[in-house]
Image (cartoon, rainbow over the protein chains, first blue to last red):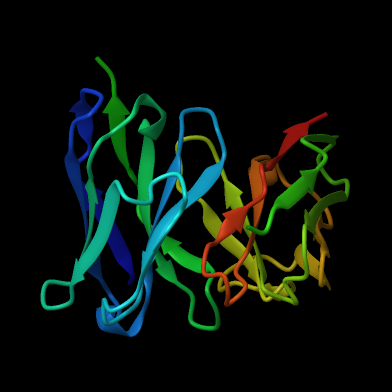
Length: 119
Length: 109
């Protein structure tokens, strides 16, 4: 059974940093690209970042480019998101999601970890 | 960036009736389109990928159609558990950014 469990969320002041983690199990982790997707309170879904299976390629939404860094440790079946220079508009529930078997959709999602940026 | 536009924003439907949700892409995404269902307090769940292929365990009352820029999700006979928010998402190979529509809320009439 595929499981994705996020952690690391919390309350941080504007300009601060936070590192999110996602522990994966139930599939061959390094076979799949992984993503972070966020959802601001009461709002829709926003794709944040993706990393290829081998970690060699990364992509970011314009809204986080230069501030967030995605990474993975395939030996630990773990995905990370380092978030720096946080802004109030980064407040959201952050999900990690697995790429699909037949394309670049998201076939499994974690339950999310909440990041609140507030002074 | 490919912009996805869903309509309507809210759809009021009685149980047992058919619901038709639309999703339009600002440029062709071929059949690289997925649909998700999200209930309050839950993570999104994949319903459809490849515009028309049901994901594992998804009931046959859910169907997807379309290609290029126009897509439709149809729920043939709404059950109580189907009242939720539905999102479309494109996943063209390039650019690699994945974009979602703003969502359609299906509510009880």
